[in-house]
Length: 324
Ligand code: MEV
Image (tube, rainbow, N blue to C red):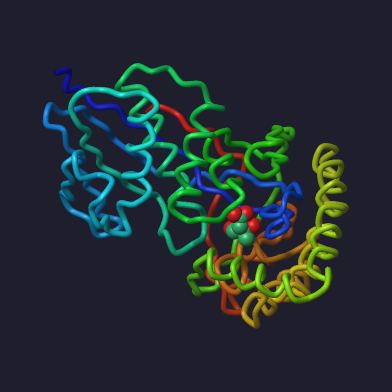
C-alpha cells in the first residue's frame, strides 16, 4: 500500500458576536485565528486506527477497526475515531489509518481544538484516499462528527476551521458567508479558567424552559446586534463594531455567562481605550477580546494583564484548512 503521509492544518477560532444565540438558529460572526491544529495521516495495511496525540496525552493509541463501534474510546481520541468512522461509512476504503496530531495552542483556551483537529484530520484522510471532497462536504461531515461526540453545538468552530477568514454564520452552515478580509486589531485575554461548553449550554437551555421567553428575547436582541455587526464589519467601521461588542457583552451578562475575572479584564480594556470588549465563546472563563487600534493595543494589553488576564498573541482572519 502507498505509505506516503499527508499533513493538513486548520485554524482555531474566536467568536466576535452572537455566541449562545447561534446555538438556537440566530447568526453569529466568527473569525479564524492563526493558532492551528495539524494532523499527519498515513494509510496502513492493518485495519486499525493508530493515534499519536501527545498534546492530549495519547501515545500510540491503537484501536482495531472491527471494534470501532463498541470500544470504550478515551476522551482525547473521540473526535478522530468518530470522524474516521463517519468517513469510512460514506467512503469505504481498505486497510487502516495512522495519525499524528499536534497543536499550536492549548485545548484550554477555547479556540476550538477539537473542531480544528477534526477538519484537519478529515482533509488529510481525503487527500490520502483521493476522495477529493469539497469544503462544504468536509464541513458537513465534521459538523456531524462534532454533534455525535458533543451532542450540542452550532458548528461555528467547524466553519471557521473549514473556511478561515471571518464568517457570517448560522447553525449547520445555513449561512456561511465570508466577510471582507479587513485587518483589525484584536487583543485576546485568557482568564486562566478552562470551561467546558456543553454543561453551560445545557444549563441555559434548562433555564430557558422555565423563564417564559426572557432568554429567547435575549437571543433575538443578539441577532439584531449581529446583523448590525455584519454591516459595520463590511464597512470596516470599527467604532460601530466596538459599540456592538459592548452591547453583546451586556446581553451575555444578562444571560448569566460572564464572571468577575471576565468583567475585570473587559472594564480594564475599555478604560485603556478599547472600542469594544466582551467575552468570546462560552463565557464563565476562557477568553475575552478587546477591539483596539494599532495605537491603543499596547495599553489595552497592559491593562488586561494588570486585571489578571493572560495575553494570547493571535492574528485574526487566518487561512482555511489546507494541506501543508
Ligand atoms: C462556544 O464557544 C460558543 C457557543 O455559542 C456554543 C456553540 O456555538 O456551539 C456557546
